[in-house]
Image (cartoon, rainbow, N blue to C red; front, top):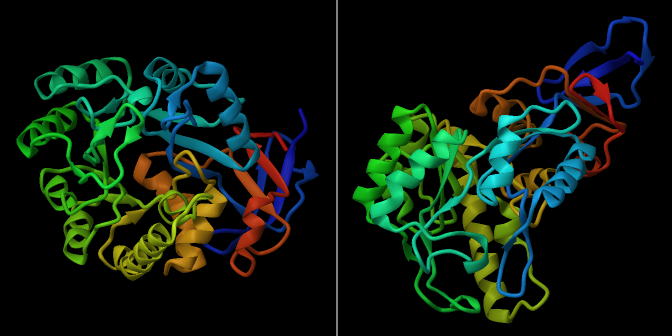
Length: 345
C-alpha cells in the first residue's frame, strides 16, 4: 500500500508539519500545501431524504451513498442526530475503515404531531424513558430530543401554527438524568425561548438554537455545552420564498450574527452540521459570514468537534491547494483526502 506524506501547514493551529500515512517515511507526497485533520459533520441525517410532505426515512443503501459523499468531501466523522435507527445504530456499532466514523442518536424523540410524520415513530410522554433505554441498549451514545416543533398535520407542519415544547420540562429533566447516568448525551432541536429551560435541565448540545440569548450561552458554556447552528438550514433562501418569509429569514440571520461571536466568548463549543440540506464546507462559510473568524469556523468543523465528541483526528487528513484562511471557498474542493490512513481521493 502506498505511503503518503504531507508537508505543509496544518489548520486550524497554523503549525508547519510533516505527516506520514503508512510505513515508508519517504513515501509519495500528497497534493496540497494546507490541511485539516479530518472534518466533522456534527449534525447529519444519513437516512433522511426529501418527500412530498417533509423528510422521509431511507435505508442502508441511501446511508452508504451519503457516507461516500461525505468522505469525498473530507469528512472523517459524523454525528447522526436522528433517522432510521435500524441503519444508523448499526453503523455506529460497526467500524469500517472505508467510511467515516458514525456516532448515532437513533430515532427522533418526539410525541405525536410534533415532528415530520414520515420521519419518525411518535413517543408518548409516558413512554419516553422506556424509549431512551431502548436506544441506549442498541448503542446510541447520543439522544435526539425534538425540544419544540409546530403542530403537524397530514401535509406537514402547519404554517402559522405556534412552535411549542414537545414534552413537559419535568419529563425532559428525567430523560436527561437517565441519559447522563448511562454516560449518554442529549442533543436538542429547539428554535424558541424554550431553549432556556432545556439548558437548565442539562441538555448537552443545542441544535439550531435560533432563539439563544446571551444568558443562555453563558449557562451553556459554563457546563461545557455545544451549539450546532446549522446555518445552511436556518438562513438559506428557498425557491418558493415569499417576501414575508424572506424578511423573517434575514431577521433571523442578523440575530444569529449578533450572538454567534458571544458563544466563543462564553466557552460554548460551536459545531458544524450539514443537517439534510448543506455541507460542512458551506457551513464553515456561513459561520464566517455570521461573525466567526475563519480559524474559529475551521475549529468548529475539525479539532473543536473532535474534542467535544471524544474523537481523534489521527489517521485522517484533508488537504487544499490554497490557504482556507484567505480563501474559505477552497474548502469545498479538497486536493486530497486521507481516511483511516488511506488516501481515498
